[in-house]
View 1 (cartoon, rainbow, N blue to C red):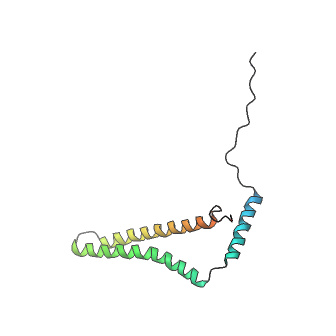
View 2: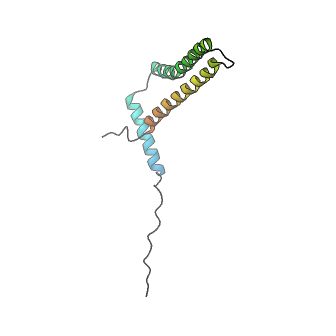
Length: 115
């Protein structure tokens, strides 16, 4: 006589946080922001400047290198335009990477635990 063992119920993936947990984490984040004080206008202007420079510097370096290449190695292609676009793309990727890292630091609950 073969008796089958009862199977355990299938385990679901990682449990999603319920509504109360989500509200609690948002409330904790708001309280932490209030206690740390609101950043002033200079902080906001500094952040915009930092993002602007992270895009402008690679763009200008690409254009300068392109101008130098066009003057020393003339040809049918415009190195200035190509390297300007490449520098702009690198600068935008740099700014996006920096902003995503800052956003993750803001929303990461493990980094700001009150131990």
